[in-house]
Image (cartoon, rainbow, N blue to C red; front, side, top):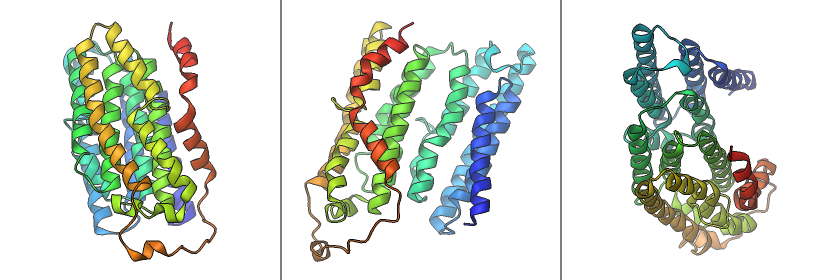
Length: 348
């Protein structure tokens, strides 16, 4: 792709998210979300592969549906209450509709089925943008909404953690596994949204750091399925030793960074007298942990049956920039000691 066009599209992507961040009016927020969608579509379709074009079409249709639903709900709210302000949502009907529209935008269960299919059709770089940056604008709106319907959010959260764990169990494609991982993590964030918005932000931040390092590892190894991970020891031995820690951090095992948001979320749910919800969420996290263990096992403890893997590849210098991977891997593995500081910041 022409670098000028690429720069313009990335600028549009950033501008759309910034407009949504800065808006207090529904029309402006909707406009930012639309700019975001339109800027990423050429990036998704740039490979001109039938799978990429199919993924782009699916993404466009789901995002257009969610945007139309959001516009309809905000117009209904203006008609019922005379308010266009995001923080003045007083009527339950438009608030519920907007919550569902934003759930469709980020891929929460039960409106999640587009996400694995779309992510599978993209290259790893665009998939990374879709899994991280594209979640920011809808979350900015969800955090501003005065949410009164706690049952809806808890049901969305629990369904997402369950579907995210269950759906990834039988997958062999890494991008689909990461899509289901994304659904499960988003479920945890939605679960705690109404009780502690700052914890949702913490969970979102740690999710972005962990997903960033996971995508970069797969991109460096040029791996798109589980079998391709088995020869990664031959290409990057040091990274192969570290990657299981990154994957187990995504699963939320102590003493890694991914344990921190899960621990704090379970603690907050228990404080809100939702012990049953916390128990269910913790049990569904075990499903996700299983497929992260599968990936770790395939990468670190197996060897490829092919004879080719026995031949040492040419030790050419990688053209990819590895500094972001080094920083994000360190953050993914070793931020848990900051937990007391985070607790101090989150307690009012």
